[in-house]
Length: 558
Image (cartoon, rainbow, N blue to C red; front, side):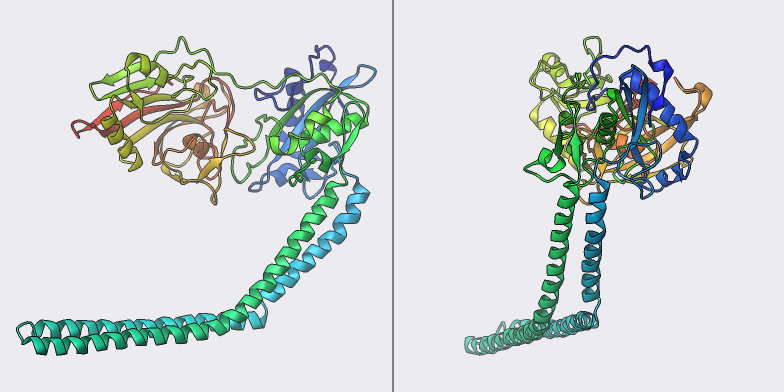
């Protein structure tokens, strides 16, 4: 369904902006997105579907708009959401899925029945009386073996102690008497070892009988699981074969062909951009501009904030969209470019023969970028002003504040050791979006890089690296005083990181299991605009030469 927007009629249309543009959608797409956001704010997605479905933990979705033009020059926009909403692919007013419905239904229903049957068979086998009896027998056997082994070890300890006492008592005896006693002690020691071997052998024989039966059970369960995975893989391949991907030239290609030789990831073809472009082509509409935004609760790993625009994903849409846009004049994707840093001052807070402490401005890199281009960074400036100085730690490009560098290798090793043992104290000042009603606490969320959206980091309790932050609420900035925003309160927070992961404070602030409040100005985890309100204002460590505790301060510039 095309939603007309008369005010879009006079806009000059440039080449179609790349869906992978890192600097956000065009003004044309933003105006259409404003209409969609206003609709979502009413609490309704459609007449029979409320936005409540998006508010459950990890229940948010990517939404999108595509501004289009028909052959008469009339403009409007199409809407879409990623995947399913409320268990439905089809919602009135939103782009339909790309796959062939009848073909998918013919595959999916019977296929799911087979998968459910295999799951039920595996569960029945795993919870059968035979398996339960074997598991119970294994636990009882293990407990008996531990008791018997502990008792034997206790007896052997007592015997060794007695042999040591006997040896000490004969220290002044004749050589022949000591030799005879030594032979007796050796014989007892051999008996103890033989007893240990006999008990171990008896336990191994008993365990072997049960283990043989349990291995048969485990092989049966593993075979059912392998069969389930094979069925799922084949089912997904057949489902993917129901997707025919169109492009602006009128050509189509199978989804799996676009990902070959690899298989498409789960959800490929169901993202916002492919849905919108396919619907536009089906209605003979010319795409003009696209915007994707998140709405609802963030995903489990974080990294998405309601109302914020995001580029198309690389893993699912990277192989699809270039083909779909063939026939369109497409602008190259823009990337975030570091600002001109010539006017940024790197202030020296303290220096002596061993260390130099500087105050880094926001927008200046800590170390040289890997691009190979001429760089301006804290490290580069120190190479000129303090030859031989080595930075011991870093701050994000957008973060300002205190950094310490060592002026010789010995000082570097001393400071680095303090960072590794976490005896260096760091304090950051931040302003976050919204009102925080807690006084403070500790955030413990393991982090790793988002492989589909670098350089963003996400929470991953399984594969992430430990990241711990202590925080304290400093005060609330009421709406009237909130710089650039007269509608929401903001909170001033102090952060005390106990580890040093990339973007740690930014993710811990934004993640719902952290503060649930992005740092103001965070272009990666919140809302871009102005500078990032994060500043390293305090640094304390032992001086590498004197061993005395030294403290440095740099008040936040906001």
